[in-house]
Amino acid sequence: MFHNRIRTYRTAALSSGNYVLYWMQQSQRTNYNHALEYAIQVANKSQLPLLLLFVFDINFPEANQRHFAFMIEGLKELEKSLKSQGIRIIFKQGDMMSEVVKLAKDASILISDYGYLRIQRVWRDKVASLINIPFYCFESDIVVPVEITSNKQEYMARTIRPKIEKELEDYLLPFHSTEYEGTYLEKYDSINPDNILELVDDSVKPVTSFHGGYSRAVNKLNNFIQQKLNNYHLHNKDLVDSNYSELSPYLHFGQISVIEIVHKIKTSSAPLEAKVAFLEQIIIRRELAVNFCYYNQNYDNFDYINPKWAADSLDFHTLDKREYLYDLDILELAQTHDPAWNAAQLQMVNTGYMHNYLRMYWGKKIIEWSISPRHAYYNMIYLNNKYELDGRDPNAFTGIAWCLGNHDTAWKERDIFGKVRYMNYQGLKRKFDIKSYEDKWLNPNDTTISFGLRQL
Ligand SMILES: Cc1cc2nc3c(=O)[nH]c(=O)nc-3n(C[C@H](O)[C@H](O)[C@H](O)COP(=O)(O)OP(=O)(O)OC[C@H]3O[C@@H](n4cnc5c(N)ncnc54)[C@H](O)[C@@H]3O)c2cc1C
Image (cartoon, rainbow, N blue to C red; front, side, top):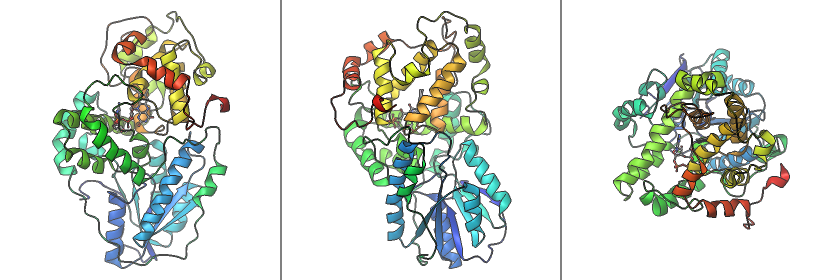
């Protein structure tokens, strides 16, 4: 089951510690968690208690109250679930590496999960250099481990698809959980996660539209399968009640496993075309994003995100005349001339989630209305990561890079965009009932929408 998911950071004989330590970071769940499963097996075998550690880094880049509130909801549910299995999790706040290293001193082995952002790599490498016990991490948040799929940065979905498909069967095996046999480690101090909220950037408030946690993720998934999946592959004109799963925030925080989702999708009674369309997004597109951030450590730097044809083409058109020019404030306040764009921006600001198709339109328009593609890029990153619950994810950096041409092909040359794909309002109108979407977000009468522009 751990087949190629294991990443060895330090090999050594199991040392004589007081517990097996699982430093939970990326995979914030008990179900389908390879790192947790491995930790339980080692604890049972070595007859040591298992201790889980979660460290709040209140300075995590671009994270604010909205993100923390969602994550904390998930962690509180997780704590209960672990407790029911006799497993202790303790919460700490402070410098990630020092907190992990402190607890690792009394551990016999350190086990962790695996995220693909730069900061997560730095943490793992640093921790590995500061401890002298075995240290293993598990790639539990994607279907096929990133290096198994490919040993290089892939050009586009077309090039990565066959590589993933070739491996899929081996990595979609049923997940067997082992029962923990050890004792509940009462004696270690923990902080109350609720107290973290007042310490973090409060410029963006929590939302009422999404609540974190595994059980909520499963509810979303079940509703999606029952009510929306059948039509996922069909074009749905309704942007207000769309066919999307809204699972991205839960995937971002590792509150549900992609493998669990894929198993449930595959065994559902939905038409094959619908399943294929959904699996294309949640496996191929999502793992293309992971591939991008893994092999391109400059995934968030304008100068390194684009293939040469797109970078040159945009550069050539930098001085083209723009009909509209908007700076960050106007964008953030949703005060452009374009009602669909403003509505999309407001959906994101108010709910922490933007409709899938609108994300593309939103990004393309920012390019059209900015003094340069570089300005557009950094404004997109800023807004996306500030307001989206699923922001700061490999998908975020890759989706934004896509707007500038990455993972895409060259189109007919035009102003501002050069050969990079362009989108317009007429296209939106043809495809969707854009008016209802605009009405919903420009004139909301829904009192559950608690956070509006007033508080910017
Ligand atoms: C400008 C821009 C910004 C984006 N920012 C983010 C972001 O911050 N976080 C984020 O998770 N995604 C981002 N995306 C990708 C995509 O739009 C979202 O993953 C998707 O809209 C999430 O909604 P959903 O879960 O309802 O999607 P569904 O359609 O239900 O898809 C299910 C899952 O498949 C994956 N998926 C779907 N579309 C894509 C895609 N195009 N690329 C990669 N994976 C995909 C996601 O994990 C998603 O949760 C962005 C795309 C663009 C163009």
